[in-house]
Structures are given as C-alpha cells and as structure tokens.
Length: 119
Length: 107
Image (cartoon, rainbow over all chains, first blue to last red; front, side):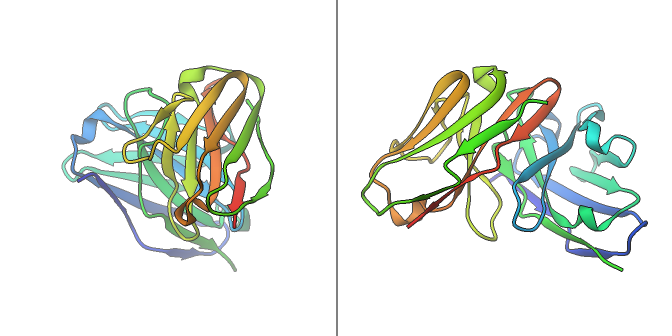
C-alpha cells in the first residue's frame, strides 16, 4: 500500500536550519510529485512547495523562495525539505503529500513532522 | 494569490442531519483543481473530493461536491459520528496552491 513516512520531531533554535525527510513506498516514486504543506498550531494548511522526483524540478511558494530547498534521492525514494533561517513563525507540523502529475490534489499524506523553533 | 474563504467557521449538527459547507474564491477557480480534505485532531488531512465533484477512493456516496467559478460546496448527507472533523477546500491557480481556513463540523 502507498505510504509516505516522515522523519521525527525536531527542536531548533532561531536562525538555524532544519532538514526533514519523507520516504515513499508502495508506488513508483518518480510518477508523483511530492509537496510539503505546513500547519501552525491551531491554524489551517499552508503550501510550501513541491519537487518532481523524476527530474528534481522545483516549484516553491513565493513566500518561501530562497529559504526552502527540496531535494530527492531516487535510490531510497526519499524527498528532503530544508528550511533555513528559522524563526518562531516556522513552528508547525510539516506534512509531505503526493500529487499525480499536475492533477492538483493530494491523494496521500505523510503522518507529519513537528518542527519547533524556540530559544 | 487566490484566497479561499470557507463558511461557516463552525457548523453544529447532529448525527443523521445533513451538512452544507461553502468555499468561495477571490477569483474564478479552474474546476478541476478544486479539492476538499477532512482532518481529524492529530491526523493528516484526507482527500475527500477532487475536481470539485469526484469522490476520492473509499469516500462514501453521502459526500458530494458541486460548484464552479468562485462558489463551491461540499454536502454531507445523513451525518455519521465519524464525519465530525475540520474540512478544508484547496485550489491551484496563479502558480500557487491555496487552502481555505477550514470549517469545523461539530456534534
């Protein structure tokens, strides 16, 4: 069955970077885009960006341009998201989710990774 | 960026009743890019409707989606206890994905 399994919770100080992962299984890794969506405490969902695992093509939300970097490792079917210059506003649960080739919806989601930014 | 506004913010109903959730866009949305998700506390969102009116795998036919342009609706008939959750609409346009702020469906 399709699974997106994310790395564990992170606690970081303001100004540093965090890198979290999303390991895919149960389908052909290169046939679906992987997106990152975050949810601040008690808030709604916010799109961060996406990567095309077939060619590493990137599309970031303008809000995060220059501060977020997504990469993939096809040998392990894993996508990584690094966010730099963290502030307390980045405290959130980060979800990865997959999208089939520009269908514009997310049919499977990871379990989420809590990122806490605190001094 | 296209802004999605959901109403009401909270909907209080009883099992067996019907629910109507609204999603209004700040500009016209391509129908095929409109989706609805259900989220329960401590869980990831779950796809309910895609392409404005297509049910996702495993979603019962009590759930239906409709609408076009700037106005979209998620209708849930004969509410069951498992349906009570937060529902988000989402669209893709102007090179960005955006979500509504959510409607909490509570007992």
